[in-house]
Length: 490
Image 1 (cartoon, rainbow, N blue to C red):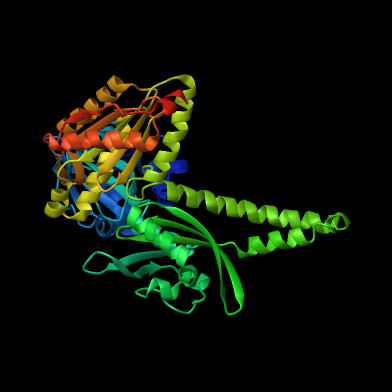
Image 2: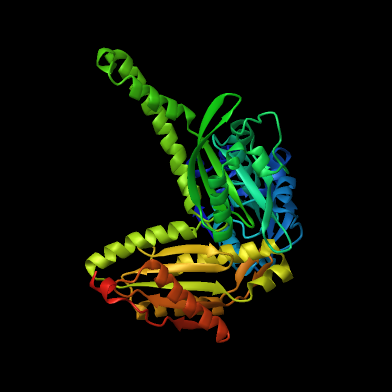
């Protein structure tokens, strides 16, 4: 669980502007180590900030009870905890919360915290200002201002609607034999409709080949089908004509469920600019002043385009659910690391991990719980590897891969055993009230001299299958590969 706790420079760290005002009001009321007088501080704070405030009373047994729970917090958290104790939360959250609250009461000073919610609803990050108070009868309280920092739904919607690129998600329709008969657009931003020459239309629920003119090209359509069936990403450059206008596109496609997502970037202006520069190359020497202005404009345009492309590359390289490397990016970076290890003569190893009986999690607790387990398992893998060198990726579904540069089979086996032991001793959090015990199967391969990465992965996969066939929740080492003499000599 991501968490921060600060008692200094709170105003500089905080995002909500109300925190600075609350700190000022607290400082005006503060009395030694007891914090602020409870009754007076509540009378001043609750009328204005009450919807974003929780009030907790310290119990005789050292716990805390919610005696006020703001409406905005209830709305974002998906429910109220009024009357509940913090000890009723999941152990990890309860320990972190109790430690923060105990320290604030002990110091008599405000504390600022940031933590990631484990509950699978919209809010990802919360920031809180914890302010201790003391009532006239000596009872201790905490006034806690709580505000969400990130919203998953709003973030995705904003990215979709403000993107300078057209974004379209497609779902395929299949016949009884499983063959693709048509593709249906399930979501598209307005920019996609503009690029397709249908700016006034809603592309939702329309046939993709009818709504997106470039899909009439048989070669592009085949590449889209390959991306769906082979589960691989692709980058396409193409052009099409609409109402007498030629549009040039760069199209990034990536598999998404039984379909794909397309990101379309209109590069027509850049193409026209390049053509113009080429046609005027002979006369640029006589137009130095105009050349400098053109270069400045192009430099600014290219800089902005590079920034957008960098962001698109980042999105294209990572798995959206876990933020781990996706399969394509994982393999690219692993191949770079292998080249470096070949030069130094170091071993490299690969662990393929698959969560056991993951379907039962979705069936018993729902897909939201399954997503939470996937994210928690990704965090577990990241915590187990060497952060300065190892790579962790999600290959799809419940399958993950860990690449270990400068690691032999024994090192890889020890790391897999640590991961297995962590799973045996820890439940993966699903929400604030639910955590699940899961197990995983591990397949390990150590790369042989001259072995290509495809064979390397296949050997680790076969070891994983043996682990599955041997009852799951176990580790198996790959058999040696048959490497040709020519490859070995190379």
